[in-house]
Each structure stands twice: as C-alpha cells, then as structure tokens.
Length: 528
Image 1 (cartoon, rainbow, N blue to C red):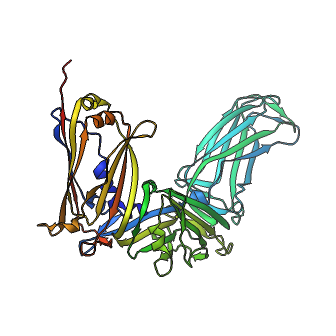
Image 2 (image 1 turned 90 degrees about the vertical axis):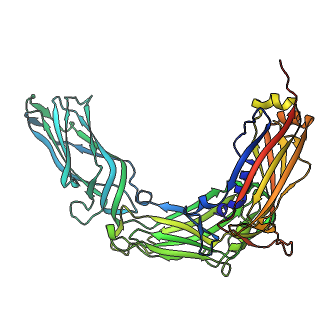
Image 3 (image 1 turned 30 degrees about the vertical axis):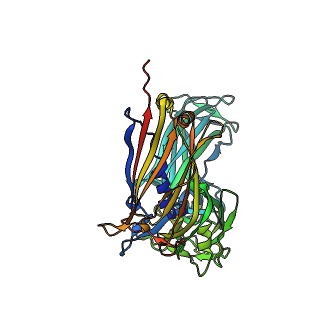
C-alpha cells in the first residue's frame, strides 16, 4: 500500500534512468529521450484522485484476503461403497432384479452439516463389479439430486463375470448445475446422499444360480465438487493465516526519511455469509531491507470483534460490515507508514459460528457471498523528504555500439529538465562489471532543482529548468563499453525556498517533469 504513496519518487527515477536501451545515430549528436512525466495515468484506478482544489489525493483500495464458499464448505473427493447380496441360494431367471434398494450414505463432512447445496461443477463416477456369469443392467437414481427439475439417473450395462474375476463397468454422471437435498430419508438429517440402485440380469441371457458368495459391489466416487450455494450449519471453524506481500521497490530505500501528513487507514471486513463470525487482527508488520521491523500498534489490535451475519437472500443479499479505522489519534499509523519497508505481513484469525449452531442450521452461502478484508487508505498526496535515498541496479547491454564507443575520443551526456514538481533531486551513476566491481562512476551527484525555485508558467504552476552535463573522455568510453550494469542512486528533498528547510509539499495535478536527454560525441572514423 505504501508503494502508491511514493509513486512520484519512483516515477521520477524511472523517467531519469530506466528508459529502454537507446540506439545512437551515426552522427553522434542527437536527442536520446524526449519525454514528460505526469501522474494523470494513475487517476481513476483506485490509486489516485484529484480533489476540488486541484491537488492529488491517495485513495488506495486493495483486497487483502477473501474466503469463498468452497474454502469454507468444501466437499472433498469421496468414494462410497455399497455391497449387495441375495444372501441365500436361488435360481436367477433372465430379467430378474436381484438388487432393488435405496441407500442413505453419510458424506462425513463433520463439523459441517449441510441440508441443501447447488453445484457449479462436479461428477459422480459409478463403478459396478458383476460376479454373475450373465450380463447385468444397472440403473442408478439419485432421489435427492435434481437437474433442470429432473431427478438425476444413469444406466449401466456390465458384461458377464465370475466369482474369481468380476467384470467391471463404469458410468460418469455430470452434476454441474444440479441441486442436492442432503436431508436424507426422513427429511430431518444432513450430509445424507440418497441413491436407488437396481441391478437386473440380462432378459436375453441364461438363468444362473446365486448363493451368498455372489456380492454385487457398487462404488460411487464424488469428485471435483464446486459449490455455488449451501445451506445448513457450517461448523465452528477457525481460519488463521499470515498474508505477506512484497513492495519490491522499497527495498531500494537505503537512507533518509519521509514525513507524511495526517492520514486515514480503514480495514473493512465484509461478511456475505448468513452466519456469525469473529475477527482478530493479531499483527501488522512492515520490514525494511536491513531487517528493521515496525509493528502497527493500536487498541484495536489483538481484540476480538464480533461479525454479524449477512441478511437477505440471493439477489437481495446484504453483507455485514466490520471496520477497523487507524488514525494518528488511535494508532502509530503515521510512524508505521513513514518507516515502511518492502515486506508487509498481516496475521489474522477469523472464527465462523463462534457461539455454535444458534441459527437452527440456517447458515447460507450464496453465489455472490464472500468473506473479504479490504484496505482503504486516504490522504493528501503530500510529504516532506529529507535526504530520501533510493538505490537500484539495472542491466546494461552496449554490445551493439561497442565499436563506436571504442573509437570515441570525447563527449558529453546532457540532460535538460523542466521540473514542475516541488521536489529536489540528486543523481549519481555507477557502472559495474560482471563481478559487481565499479569500473566507472560520475565524480559527484548532479542536482535537479525543485519547481518551487522556478518561475510561474502560463498554466499557473512554477517551473524550474535544470541542466546536467556529464563529460566523458576517451578512456571512460572504453571502460563504459565493458560495463554490464548501471547503479543509480537518487536523493530527494523538499526544501522550502524561504527557509531552505525540508517541509511538506502537496502535488498539484499540473505537476510535470520534462526531460530531454542528448549526447554529443566526437570520435575518429576508422575505415577497414
């Protein structure tokens, strides 16, 4: 979340030194970069907005975590087995139904107790093993499962087998879009899958003799279940997790400080389940690249907050909202963000149904239900910078112009800048070889003047011009030709023209940085 607070700083660095590799023209006196940086591309993307006074505000919105139905009420792949035997010795004539039975099987979802579910995806694979020396026909019906208002069923034929080598047959039933009643035979149970299985000997086959040794085995494998609706009791479950995120560019912050204005950080837990909950924020920590960590402190941390159940149903569903609001008056949020590092860690615990089954098994989860935690950071895009230093390394490939560099005798790299941002910068460049050794460095930092030291433009904003010239001699060019990477170190300050002390600045929507990079190069042409 801190990335967007510093977006101007990073963009400034990238604009100055992280352009695509430049192809130099043969006359060696040409513009290499002609570009203008503004922040308007970041407006209206849940990051920046422009207020009525024409200044940027940070309005950062991000989702930190989300639970959907299948993460709370998941049904694992399950195989149910039924064994059917006549139990005595009888003659089985052709077309005889020696299995005709309705079974109630428990899905074993404890502590979850489901009475109804709608399936987005899923299958039941039926495997029948036939020990009889005649072909059999099997009809599988699922009385509690309907698809498009019709009870789901399937037919399966299995060739003749034997006691020692039963013949197998399989049938796959697609359950996508179906509704399951799991209340069982009595209508008052839960997690119960009903199946009615009929096995009939081949009407055109031979008569056979059945004994208690003949057992017809039916396996039903429920797999790949994805729910979109569930009703029942979802259990007293506790979800604990650690959410970690990397803000990679902050690893490049090596020195200096930033002073932020007043800000307002909201964490909002939205509960779209018709079930009560309880949330505890255990820890929020940011860690710098040097290992220094800063924890968010507040009387709201490590304190359980009750979460109400959602209300309504289907299209009228209304999630409950539970809010954490961190301000300078109730937390160290300002200090926390001013010391932000590239590692951000959030540790939380969410308990579902903390008081048990008080809903009468009337928990519900709809297709648009979710439990999610959203972050909303609002503040003016303003800050005071004091020697705020960022260091980064970029790959450099000069192989395509190595010949020209080796022939160069002298030259200049020139940057012309028009800065309307109220920020002063200093740049230092170092070139390194494959082993990380510095083989060329500029003799000193070069300054980019703050726009506050400039003159008022026709657009109503102060603009300051700067000119940076780096002179390079013949030996430098030969060294540069062998470099593989470039290290850029940038320092930023926000000096007040009246006092020269660093003070808070706010960014106007008219702010821009115009950059023209050009090279003048003198060399001796060699003809081969």
